[in-house]
Length: 204
Image 1 (cartoon, rainbow, N blue to C red):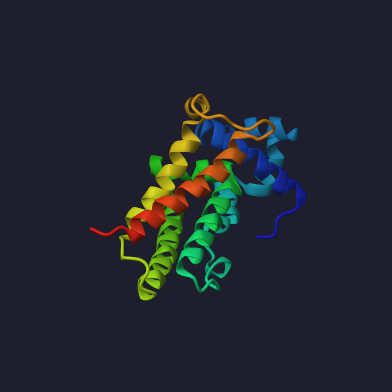
Image 2 (cartoon, one colour):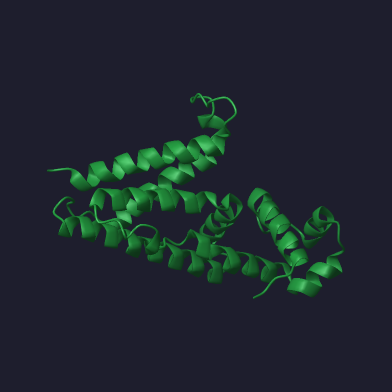
């Protein structure tokens, strides 16, 4: 679907409101007021709030999929793993509002079609992670470990930091001039590299 400038503006505003307040607690009027347009324009462009959500998710979800072309040219299994983690974290930070919406929709299970999209996203990323693990096993430097569990570790760590920002900020010393998100992106990337390497090279 090709979107014009006004549609993209409406989507950006709706995305922020859905992420902050939840889909059900956000009205079309809320979106229209923030966008400084009338409700009829939103209905003209998207027909309904539900369709606006669908367009919003379908347009943005591709950015969260791991793209093997970003890292699979690396012949060193450890470097490939590191590049994959960097790509994974970068993708999550590409649109934090959308990620919050996807998480909310998957948890509420009120709209099954969106939960299905979220499942497909996870299935895709787990498959790409499995490929990275298999490559390291083939090279003799990794032991096989369940990619579902590793993916859960990755996504769970990200969500914990993201959803507990106010608490975590009390325990960390963020360098002057750096935002929490910038700090988190750097530290989360280093942490996930360390954790995944430790798990994949651990000997019983």
